[in-house]
Length: 441
Image 1: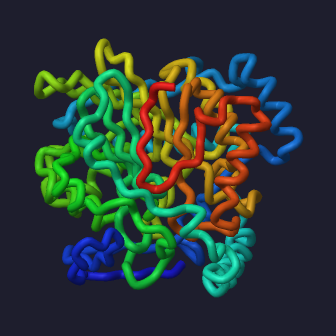
Image 2: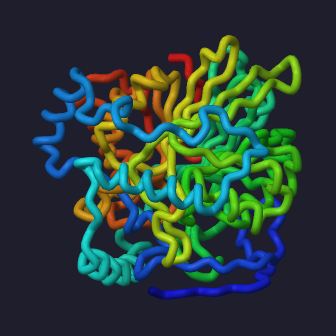
């Protein structure tokens, strides 16, 4: 395991108007990456699909018509508390026991298996080649024409519709969701690299749509930041620190076990961070007449956690269901990272249907390593049906070189999968980074 310890990093000056910034931080950071591939966290934790595409399409179609193999209502762990508050206190031992129990729950799912060490070693060697040849072979010359960065419509962000959900893809898994009068940001990564340090690790080949400062300058304050797990392409120190400094009233909602990291590393997070077990709901009342009450629920996903190389599965991971609007009839699902598992159908039955869902479609190759953690585009289309999403936004592609598929392949396979499914292609279209969509079809 390669350990990188960096203390008192300082940020280099930002270039005015440049959305892609290099963030050298000033606070203590002891971030370690996983062996071989984990500045590329998702690498080893990448994508998932059922073993065999031909069998998978058959079995998925059948399973969507009948109850899931795994009934969450039977024998599942009761949430620690149905509606935890910001001031809830949990001991380290309570958290450790519950996270370990959830790890055991995931390990019992028939779709989950942990790849061998030899697989990771081989993958690490493959990534040496990836770093060497990525720019020449995996990013087409016409990438900027195929996937131009779309200018963010800040006017739309300042005036979101009241009767539907508005979603803006900022890049990778960073999504701005405007629902019930609230501005909610997911898995914020605005830095140049998704890594423990900004001089090594996966570097963007597509800028983020904007910076944290841009949102503040354009009068788009963030009310909640949701973090699905602690991998570097989903939890970026520089980005969450900036958000906390610029939005002092903002709340962080994180999986069980991550609150300590936030309160130890991020200013203004103590007393404004809530950690959730699966199936727990954080409810927050409206603060003005333009807002509704909001419910944020942590839902199970098939993934894993690891930040230092020595803390695998010591904190939880999750997706988030968000209900708000009049009578809480607006419903959004953010999945974070997940492989396909039958429990997705249970999520649809318990918490759906969803007006719109953010579903990952990239970082899925090689499949023998990635299928436990990330879906491919065909599975993403299946997931849309499984959770009962009327519309979906594809995320987790087109920003960082995390795995070995060509960078435009997720987009192209999504288009083909939607055509094969005979769904309306406008309900799950590829987006440009910076593009905004609304939930109304």
